[in-house]
Amino acid sequence: MNQKGILRPGEALEDYSLCPVPLEQRKAWIDVTIVWVGVAVVMSALLRGMMIGLGLGSLGRVLFAYGLGELLLILMMVFSGYLGARTGLSTPLLASRTFGTRGSFIISMLLGLAFLGWFAVQAGFFAETMAIFFRFPLSKSWLALASGLAMMLPVIFGFRGLRTFSWLAVPPMLLAFIYAVFKVGFHFLPRAKLLDLARAHQPSSYPLTVGEAASLVAGGFIVGAVTSADIFRYARPRWLEVAASAAIAMVISASMQFIGSALAMSTGLYHEELPRIIISFEFAGLGFLGFLAITFAQWTTNDSNLYSSVLAFNNLIRLKRWKLTLFLGLLGSTLAAAGFLGHLSLFLSFLAVACGPVGGILLVDHYFIHKINKVNLSANGFYFRSERNRINWLALGSYFLAFTIGWLTSGHPWRLSLFPFSIFAFNGILAGGIFYWIGSILKNVFKKKRCPT
Image (cartoon, rainbow, N blue to C red; front, side, top):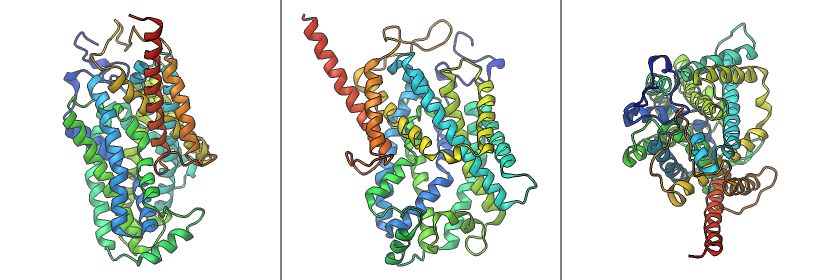
């Protein structure tokens, strides 16, 4: 890297994973937005929409739930994302500032495992989609391995790869899904019929209250919102641009969920039947184009899972980013092929809960406790704060308390209604911020008592 912070040609694949993205390398807001839209256009959004549509049974209630859930996500994305845009740092490096250099290792490990786990699961789902549409001579295990390796390719090129692939895949995906909902039509079944279907769904019923639906909306994207600095570090440090990107991405996400709701409310089919609705000529009839839309919706989102996992592990393993991408991509693909993580839903839920408190503590630390002035760099280009201990015990203590709150309100293994609705990741965010803020105030009070002026 030269003195201006610009990578040399041989370092082009490094993607500034261990140092701030220089201002000269920041991208136009539309480029950042298209990456986020690629993340938002995901199969799980359609599936959540189908569950909400049947569960609420009313267009007005559906839209209100979307508005409530997406508003929480936009606020989280804007404040977390601006930290990335202001400093040029990824979430793990921001965590180094707050939790201390060694304290952040725990956070990086949790984030890295969570995103790698979901990458493996999504690669497995992608293989299942391939197996349904095509009759390959390969087993699902080999298809899962091939799917993960294919999804890894754009990530090797970092943000540039995500941006290029999103520009290619997102516009046709959106057109395909919009066409599907208009083809099926908006002739919804009676609300009583939809609610009966929601209650009858096995193994568990669909959400039947607006609060539960809003929780499903926000919970489905909250980890991405908490770690939004990973993408927004490539944005220019302008509040309006960050807010516009976050709002557009979440409006697209809500639109995807609305498409899912409309499809379910028109057909009365459960979310397990989504591929049939999109592909079959009985409904939308998109055939191969529908298959491509579904697969690319999985692909663009899963790229971001691996990208964030690499950034997190790069804080632990000082290896060239593209080499680490190859290693983790191969590892995730192998796990997908083995079907290992597909049976560990409780473990992945555990990791999802573990991400929430990080966001609350980072926001309180940067916006209330310590003002952001400038980024300090050591001679070798690694980020540090010389005045901060290697472990910030207050931040770590607040994190584990908040994690406990998030876990107990997630329904695994118990359910405690301590916070609004049932958005367990949001509960962790709120608890983490509150514990850290109160702890910081008490710490300053004790300091003043010990050292009176």
